[in-house]
Length: 183
Image (tube, rainbow, N blue to C red; front, top):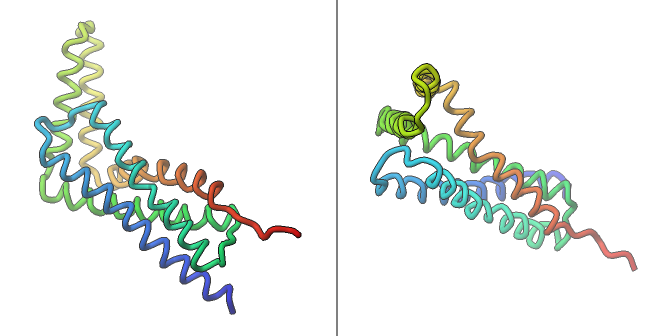
């Protein structure tokens, strides 16, 4: 009977702490985009975005530790913690994708238009031969066109955050695991 009670509780922790991690990521990024001076600001904004995701994913560690201490009597295996952490990362990823889609619904193609324009502007200053420059511009424009397709964009958006969450989940599982002590 204890095993059947444990799963719904694990799901609850996954939804709560994964949702918090996703909400933190979304909130900070949307605020950042609202105050950004130029759309598609490039590498520095990408690094800041991943740093924000990494910091938000600390909630995975907190959720695992809470689950271990409150529901497991202070004991948890690496694999149980990893499953919980993966669930939290997935919930955070789904929340991130849904909110990104809502944001794009309000702003239209402004993000990808700004991003492709910034990428093309960056190419212009590199002094590439005309044929190579045009080839790269065509690639950027094709990517922008593909980004307009929700079936392409949603998995790509999930791939932005999910690997970060899974890495944090694996490290956190290793840290919080506790097995019964043998006397």
